[in-house]
Image (cartoon, rainbow, N blue to C red; front, side, top):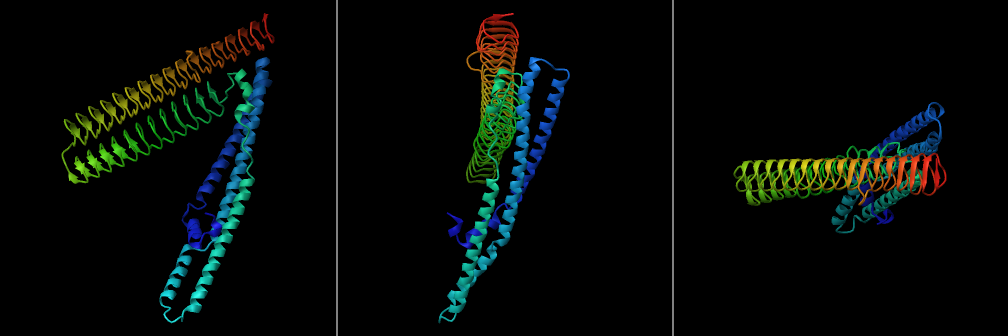
Length: 488
C-alpha cells in the first residue's frame, strides 16, 4: 500500500525500526573502494601493455594484443567512473534518509497521542472532554500530514539520486567479442569463457577461483551454482565447501539454511543432524535440542521418542559404539545415519567427518560414493568437485580427469564448455581439442580460434595449419597467410 494513505503509526514505525542509513553508507564506502581499485587496475594495465608494445614486443601479435587491450582499459576506466558515481549517489540517499528521519514524527509521540485519545473518550461520560478530544484528533491529523510530507520528500530525493545513476556498462561479450579469435587474451585468467574472471576454467563471469560453473563465486573453486564462498558447492549462497543446497554456513551439508557441517535437511544448527530445525549434534528427527536424540521436539541427550526432556543412554540408536549417535551400527560420535565410522556423519555407510552423502570416505562430502574432501557431486575421487565421476580437484563438470574443469569429458586443466568431444590440455573452450587455449572444436596446438585448426595462433573457419594464419575459410597452411587456399 502507498505511504500516502498509511497512518503515522505505520510510516513512523517503518522509518525508525529499519536498518537506517548504515547499510547505504557501507555500500557507498564499498563502491568508493571498488572505484579506486578499478581506476588503479586500468592505469596499471594500460601502462604495462603500452610498455610492452613500444619496447620488446613488436609485430602482428603485438598489434592484435593492443587492439584487445585498449577497449579493455577503457572499460575499466568507465567502470571506475560509474562506481564512483554510484558511491556518491548512495551517500546522497543516506543523507536524504537522515533528513526524512528527522522530519518524521517519533512512534512514541504517535502512541502517546492515541493513548490520550482513548483516555479522553473513556472518561467522556457527560461530553466534558469534547474540546480535548477534538484537539487530540487535530494533533493526530497534523502528525499524519507531517509523516506523508516527509515520505514524499524522501521518495523524491531517493528517486533523483537513482535517476543520476548511469545505465549499466555495455556487456563485456559485445565489447570483447573478437577475443574469441585471440584465445590467449583472457587477461584475468586462463581458459575462462567470460571476462572479469580471475582463475582457470570458469564458464561464467565474476568468479574469483577456478573450475566454477556459475557466477560470482568468490574465494573458491569447483562450484556449480552462483554466489558461493568456498569450493565444491552445488547450489547458491553457500559459505563453506562441499554443500548441496543453498544458504548453508558450513561444509558437507545436504539441504538449505544449515549452520554447521554434515547435516541432512534444513535449518539445522550443529553437526551431523538428519532432519530439520535441530540444535546440536547427531540428532535424527526435527526440532531436537541436544545430542544424539531420535524423534521430534526432544531436549536432552540420547532420547528416543517425541517431546521428551532429560538424558537417555549414550546413544539413541541400535548397535552404536561411541557417544551421541542416533542411527544404527555407527562407530564414533554424533552420527545420525547408519553404518558410519567417524564424527558427525548423517548419511549411510560413510567413513570420515561431516559427510551427508552415502558410501563416502573423507571429510565434509555431501555427494555419494566419493573419496576425498568437500565433494558435492557423486562418484568423485579428489576434492571440491561439484560434478560427477571426476578424478581430481575443483571440477564443476562431469567425467573429468584433472583440475578446474567446468566442461565434461576432459583431461587436463581449465577446460570448459566441452560436450561429447573429449578434450585434453589446458584452457580449451571447444570440443575434441588438444593443446593449450584453443577456442575452436577439434583444434590441435596453441591459441587457435577456429575449427579443425592445427598449429599456433591461427584464426579462421576450418582446415588451417601453421602459425598466425588469419584466413576467412580453410585449406591454408604456412605462416602469416591472410587468405584461403594458400601455402607458404
